Amino acid sequence: MTSQLKNICVYCGSSTGSEPSFLEAAETFGRILAYENVGLVYGGGGIGIMGVIARTVMQENGRVTGIIPDFLQKREVRFDEVSEFIVTTSMHERKQLMFERSDAFVVLPGGIGTLEEAVEMLTWAQLGRHNLPIIIANLNGFWDPLIELFDHIIKAGFARSNIRGIYAVVDKVEDILPRIRATL
Image 1 (cartoon, rainbow, N blue to C red):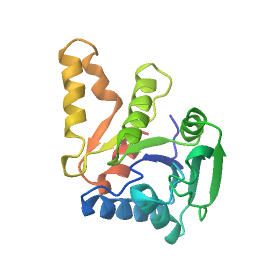
Image 2 (cartoon, helix red, strand yellow):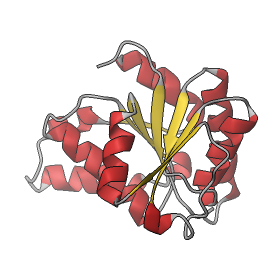
Image 3 (cartoon, rainbow, N blue to C red):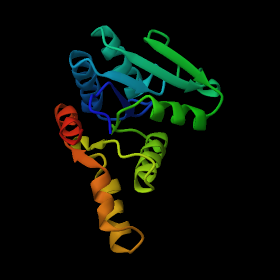
C-alpha cells in the first residue's frame, strides 16, 4: 500500500440519477479532492455525476485524469478540460489504467457500469491482486441493497465473512478521505 494518497479512482454514474443530493455530494467531494491535493482518476465523461465531479475538481484547480474507451467518447460526452486525457481501445484497458493510476477506489451512486467496476476492484482485492482501500459511499442508503447482497452471499456460504474487510462503507463524502487515510 502506498504511504501517500496521490490519486483516487472514483466510479460513478454517467447519469444524474433522480436524487439531487447525489450531484451535490459529487460537487462536495470534488472540492474536497482539489483542496486536499488528491487527484481524480475517472471515466472521462462530461455528463452525469461523472461530469459534475470532474468539472468541480478542475474549477477548484485540482488534477483530473479522464480515461475513456474510444467507443464511449460520444455517448459519455468526452470531457476534454482535464489535466490528462487518455483514450483506450477497450473497457478492459480503461479499467486497467484506472487501477494502475490510483491509490484508492471510491464508489459513488451509479448504474450497472459503476457496479461492475466496483465489483471488479472488490474481486481483485479478494484474489490478492491489490490491497488498496475501497470505499462505498452509501449516500442516502443508495448501496444498501448491494451491502445486503454481500451479506447474503456470505450467509449462503459463497464467500467468507472476511470479505467485509476489503471495503469500507461511509454515509457522507466528507468521511471518504479520513477513512482512506486511516488505512494507509
